[in-house]
Length: 148
Image 1 (cartoon, rainbow, N blue to C red):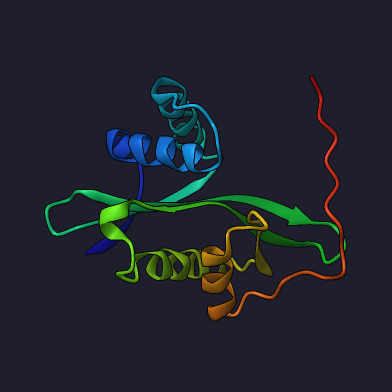
Image 2 (image 1 turned 90 degrees about the vertical axis):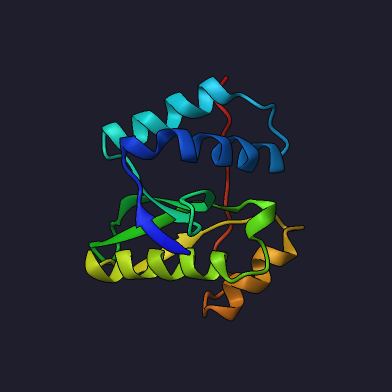
């Protein structure tokens, strides 16, 4: 198993994983939309994506991070927005390896921290994040304004 930085040559490997990830969060399957979204992120360097591949170069999982800035500390940070491991890759440490690659990216780019959110009922992910040293924020609330 290896973790590699994804580029446009990997789009057909990432697309079905991204689509499955979206379905996990109760979205309708949309392969073409997923392909376009990931293609845009890679082409325009909006995100960094790392891909987990098995010994036969079959895609097992991915992590996608977006760079951003924090005004108060005037530092770079990364938002880890997507982490997904397909069923055949689960319980093999792949999510931990992807998270470690995300941490290395943050270190390499002198980011202050990585921020992430997960569903309240996604206790499996919460256990993983906390086992890797992530602290749950009890100081700030998240607010959302939907624009239709």
